[in-house]
Length: 203
Image (tube, rainbow, N blue to C red; front, side, top):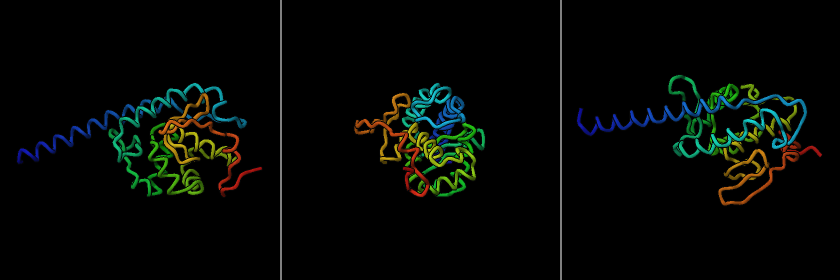
C-alpha cells in the first residue's frame, strides 16, 4: 500500500476512535437524565424533584457536546455497540431513523443536538414529530400541551428554541433562553402548554 494511502487510513482510524471515545462520554452523561412522570402541569422551570436536580448537569452536557461534535453530526445513538450510530441531517429525513433516536432517548441512550432539533422541527413539524413519538413511546402523554412542552423542553436543553427558531443556551432554573446574539427571553411555558398539534391554542 502506498505511504499516502496508509497515512489516510491511519488518520481515518484515529478520527473514528476519537469520535467513539467522545460519544461514549455522551452516553455516560445521558444516563444521569431520565424523564419523570408529572401528575399535574407546572411550568418546566418550576418543577421540582428529578427535573430540577438533573437539569443543570444535562445543560452543561449539551453545551460540552455541541463544542465537541463535528458540524455534520447532529445526533448520536448508542446502538449498535461499541461505536453506536452517528446521524447527519440527511439521515434524520428518514422517519425510521428518528424513531430509533426517540427510542434511544427514552432509555437515555441517544442525543440530538441543536442543529438536529432545528432540522426535525422544520422538516416534520409538531404534527409529524408527534406521529413519530407515538411510534417510539418516548414522550407520549394524553395531554397535547404537556407533550408539546416536553418536546420543546428537550430541544431547549440541547440549545434550540423552536418557538422563535433561535439557537443558544437555556437555563432551566430561571426559564430564560439566551440566543447566540446575546438576547435574553423568558420562555412562556404556560403559553406553550396551551399549544395544540393542529397549530391552535387553548384559550
